[in-house]
Image (cartoon, rainbow, N blue to C red; front, side, top):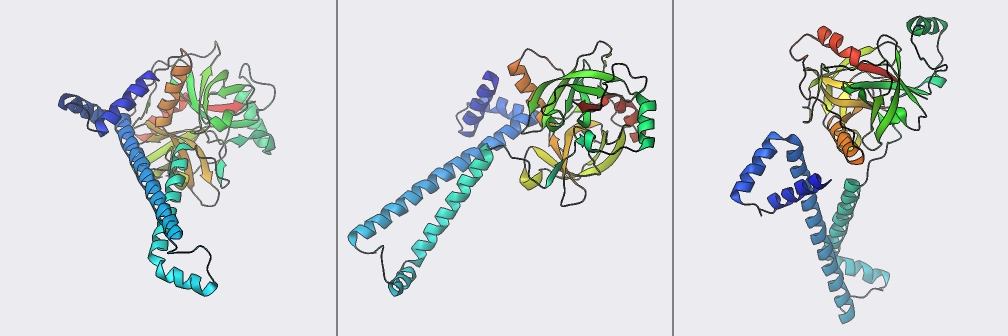
Length: 364
């Protein structure tokens, strides 16, 4: 928290041109090399401009009110007029009224903008979360037999199916995973299943409902840590039109899909999410969104029910924010890598190296 405050203070000094030439040069080098700092500068500059404009508009509106009251006091305008007089009065002062109405409208928009800026966005009713409601899904006899054959040798398997299912992926080989917050919301216990059908007990260590990010920790002595993850987590924003792919568990076996980034913001301009064009179904929630280099750029979360193929994902920067919050609340240290070791190899080989780090998440 202290480091965040110091960084914010540095951003304000930079924007207010209060830095020395040497400090300014050093800060601009930091901004050029760190996308998070650059994004913070842009956001804070926009915020300060909004606050300044809002104050100016409020002051102007107050001046208009004082002029109006002064005119009423001097008898130059009256608040009560016969109908015909009102029409004449509107004609006489229509420019003033139009200006006042414009100012009022702009002020209302400014207030609305500030409220939107500070208020977390809620899930709209036409966005369907892509967690799988297991108890409500009718499973065929053949599918049941397949599940039994796949999982019958899985030790420590829960006696009953979970309430919800989703996808998760490792961000630290010691056993830390990321999934969607809504997959594990209000869960009494969480299990994860790998591609071999092995169950592991996991614990929720962090949840952020606004960004729809949850961090889990595998707590099972049978889990073998992964020395090096094949993919990295990307801090910078993804590019419009960038080719993407995802791995997830809409079924009991892992499923691959590919698409592209169709917008840099989510539903109604939500800045914590991306809009992507890809096939997604219940159970895909929490699945990683990879770019062609095998870097995680997002976490799949939901789709628009009123439009085909419009899917949304939490941006990967929210993973780093979750880790910062977790670091402040506890002594937990999670080390994630930004470099991908599957960059430059063909897609089939990328999937083979990545899929062992992708898990079916079952919440109870």
